Structure formats: C-alpha cells, structure tokens
Length: 232
Image 1 (cartoon, rainbow, N blue to C red):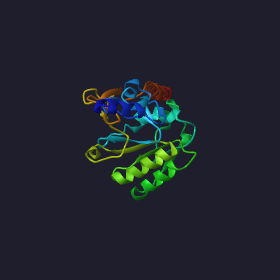
Image 2 (image 1 turned 60 degrees about the vertical axis):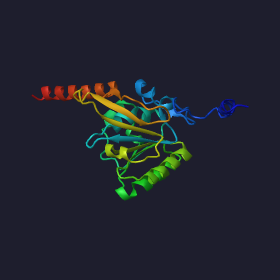
Image 3 (image 1 turned 180 degrees about the vertical axis):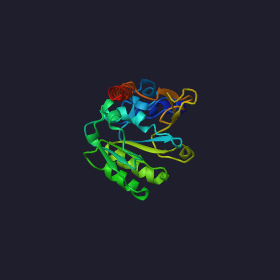
Image 4 (image 1 turned 120 degrees about the horizontal axis):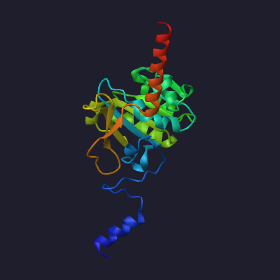
C-alpha cells in the first residue's frame, strides 16, 4: 500500500478528524448567536455548549450582552450566573430579548475568588450558562473552566480585555469585539481570533443594538417625552 493510500485510509477510519482548512464539526450542541453572519463563521453555527468562549474587548467597551444575550435567552430556563459583572444589567433590555431577570444570579465575588465561583457555578446542575469577568486569568486557570464546562455541558463566556489576545488561551472559540470606527457607534465589529477552522480574515459587522432592544429604548424615550409633555 502506498503512503498516500495509507493516509487516505486513516482519514476514512477517523471520520471526525478535523482538517485545518475546513470548519470543524463540534462534538457538542451549539446555541445560535442570533446573527446569521456570525453563526456562519462558527463551527456548528453557534456558541458551543461545554466549551470556553472567550470575548475580548477594548477598555471601556461592554458589548458582552449584545453578543451573548440572544443565546442566553434561548439556552434554557435555568439560572444564568454572572461572576464579577461590572454592574447590574438593564432589566427592560433583557426582557426585550427574552431573558427574564429572575433567571439572573449576580455573584459579586472579589477578583481572587471569581475563578472558584465560576467553577462552582459550572458544576451546578440547575445552571444553564455562566458569564465570568476574569481580566487577569492565567491560561491554566482558564483551562480549569474549560474542563468544568465540558464535563457539565454548560454555556460559558469569559470576558477579558483586548490586550489579552497576546496571551495563550485554551478557549475553543476566541473573539475580539469593538465598536466600528466609522459607524458612529451604531455598529459592532467582531473578529474571530480562534476557532477550529481556517483563519477568518475579516471581521463581521453587527448592529450595535438589536431590533427588539432598539424598539424597547425608543418606546422608553417616547414614554419619557409623553410624561414630560403631560406635566408641562
């Protein structure tokens, strides 16, 4: 048997072998991001369950809810645990996207305890998803979260600063999200830095505010104007 024939035979035997020039077929389920252009870039067409997704952002940018909220709303009915979130999210915005505030668990852990808190949340059977703000996490610490997410098939997002892209990461999926410089704040650019597949050359552009959220904010502004006019 020739070397080429033997190699082809091995590929036939291992049908799940990932080829670097094609998107991998995930071994776990995925949850759609809510954006077709982004789904098209992700293996399986969405955020992976049982794996670490790392979202990097420039200082002062907080696009995590814009990216994660649609998936959090449809991933189940159990708790969504936020570890080290910088603030309590805006309830009407969550409701507009289908995520009830009653599902949110806000863990205000000090920086030294966030890793432990996130790991415990991943091991809780009732929890559907975990978002952890871990700006200074080391690669070995992230690997612990990756293993816990894989063991318990959880949706896991870790939020870190953009400069962390210079560091090694065990994340299955790694993205950089930043406002588009030429869109006046109305667009968000998402660059896929790491995935099981060929490199992504260009970022995708998403509306900074989903349609449902934009309608919610517009209604809120109209209500405020109506109240002002009534009391004038």
